[in-house]
Image 1 (spheres, rainbow, N blue to C red):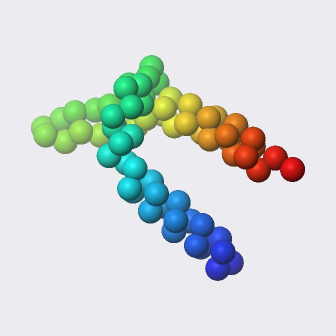
Image 2: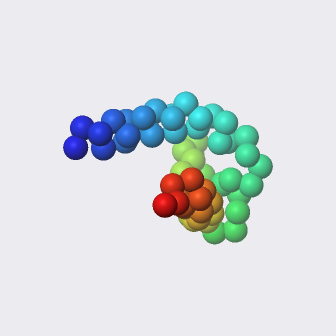
Length: 68
């Protein structure tokens, strides 16, 4: 259980550290299927298609790395 918590904390820290760099990737958040609403100075973004693409890419990468 302690190992799982450690892995989750490290993953959250890495995502937090690299989140400013994610905004610089040209296609993330701008794919067809990514939703964005702006009203009165508030912007809400729901990157559905980008999340799907990243999920597939990470799944393939992790399967190659941890293949037994």
